[in-house]
Image (cartoon, rainbow, N blue to C red):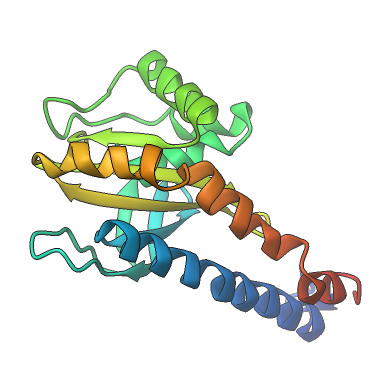
Length: 207
């Protein structure tokens, strides 16, 4: 660490380089998993990270179906009514979740959850089954599934898929929960390896 011109403590160059190295390694791990999942089900796979009260899209692999949903990298999504948002909330401590859901929850569609008790039940369900569901809660005509995990830098991250709310929605959920490994095993168990790989162990040990 180093002192800034304002006499405040800030991260020194060495720690900054280590953080960037861990982040780059994590991206290297998640990208192939996203590509594999996208190829398996033909849908767009998103990677999001919590920033304040929002889930920010940080990465994406586009699917090959002609009818698909695509969001812009950098786009922000509310935590309480999206699959990636609820997945992120599911991996945070209860105290932090309580603070994040204490804000007003606007009713964006007829399916939007606006009761905190109902949202807490959704979060608890995500913790049990390994994935969160957006049943046209953020936008009419769009459904989603997402799974959350903590990256090597301690950030809450989610991998998610959004699809048009058609008959394909049932096919997607079946494909993810039955034909392919469940999101919690497929994403969490493999992405969390970034925290225990030789690369990350060597960088975290050289403070």
